[in-house]
Amino acid sequence: MARNFLLHQALISNMNKCLLRLFPLTLAILAVGCRNQPKSAADAHIQVVMKKYTIEPAIIHVKSSQTTELDVTTADVQHGFDVPALGIKEPVRPGQSAVVTLKNPPKGEYKVACGIICGPHHDDMVAKLVVE
Image 1: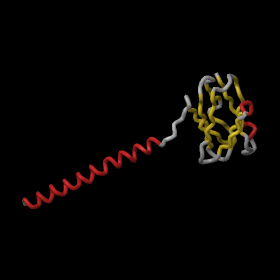
Image 2: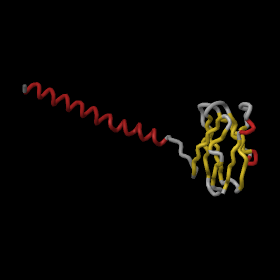
Image 3: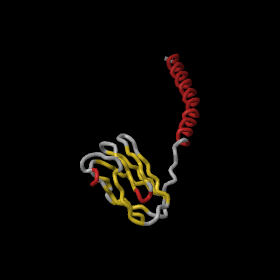
Image 4: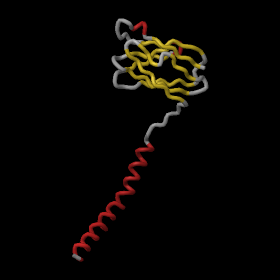
């Protein structure tokens, strides 16, 4: 019985030594992984979803004094996120996000439209970007 106890203690001691050696390696991997995450300089983030034949939200509010990222996705087919007055023309593909960055845009109201023909009601696919 004493022999089993000593073997058990030796096994626990070896396991603890292995864990202590792996702990710094685990911390190093986590630190490198966290450090390499891209950091956004945007002050605000807004989700925009395009789908036949709507853009949601229909009115997108942003502040002129901020940098805003619009994370644009499509729920069905390829669309185009276009704001002609601001020179924005961004394709939006299924399964991928398109990030549109607005850096201190001028105040005003701008028409947002789908820039890629997506069906019979394509021309109805509009929204408004309001910069306050």
